[in-house]
Image (cartoon, rainbow, N blue to C red; front, side):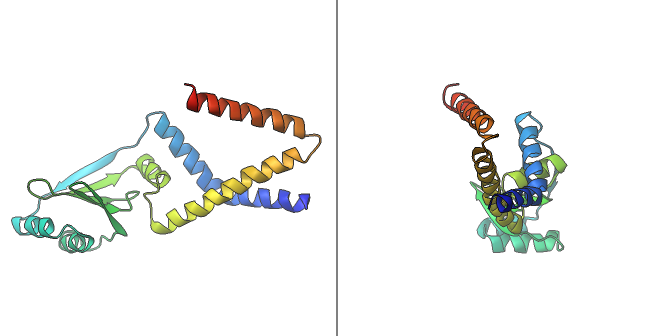
Length: 178
């Protein structure tokens, strides 16, 4: 049984290593203040298009608007934030429609750091978001199997208990006492 758990632990860890490294890197960069940059290009709208999107601020309305402006562009879904419509995913080039006053369209192109952070936040393609949900379960299995392996080994049990307790104490102190 132990041999099977070791093998599963290693296989799951190896499989999810690339995405876990991306999440650690993007989260670390974000916390260090490196949030990436975007290039914003305003796109003037004719009065007819501005009126049309203001009258129909839906996914269909945005698809119709972008069909005239960028026929090759496609998006998975629309995020509505106040008077702003944002095409998703935002981990690649995307569009924002601001409906305040007269409708304004902006093409936004993230750099690689901003793209990674958007993926980290779950703003990537739908299939990747589903993969990230599976990865969360995988990470849970990696941690729990690692703890189990350490606690069931008489040679590793003391160091596993000490480091786990130290980690728990550090988390509790930093999260709730600082």
